[in-house]
Image (cartoon, rainbow, N blue to C red; front, side, top):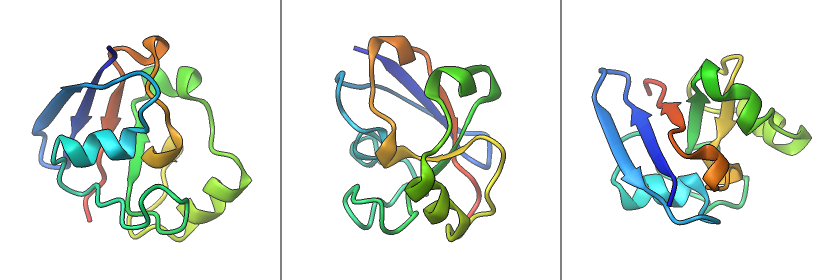
Amino acid sequence: MPHITWILADGRRIDADVLEGEHLMAAACSARVPGIDGDCGGCLSCGTCHVVVDAAWAAQVGPPDGNESAMLDAAASARQPHSRLSCQITASAALDGLVLHVPAA
């Protein structure tokens, strides 16, 4: 079960063990991570699950695809080099220890 850490804008950390195959937006909502709303339920249509992948994990997570990239441009928080929508990241053993930063609203 991969262990994921979300770091909030104020520096607080929220950790959770996530089932493999679960989208990290759903995991963040279950863990009550502030700033991850997932208003569209993971349909790639709202941008309310915007996270910034820690630079050490950027290669493992990979870049956004075209549709995700377009939605990131419309997200409430400014897009950053390693921005992703957490509804598009799936938990796997390869992501055990992943660190995600939640941008300030």
